[in-house]
Image 1: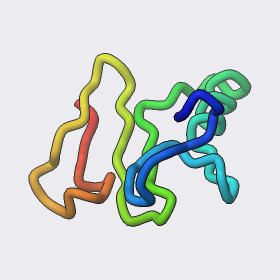
Image 2: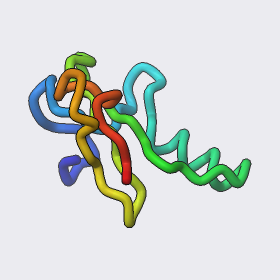
Image 3: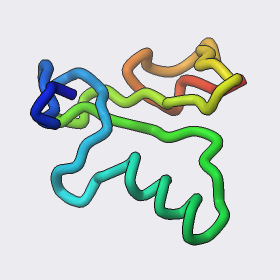
Image 4: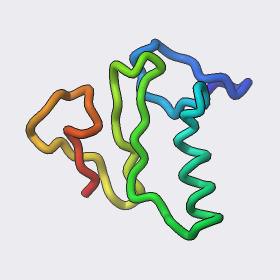
Length: 79
């Protein structure tokens, strides 16, 4: 995010997206605070949806599952 709060970067960079109702970060925070459901991982995608990656909750780290597209969050685990 830039200093103005706007998302910057190429359309293929996976970042939390506030546009089109896809506010992954706020939705997960809201579920944690209001429903007591802490996220284990949050999948984020690029503005053009070409790339997605998981954000793993500390102390877990993103790990490739060894199969699938490198640009797909489904190809990774948090361990």
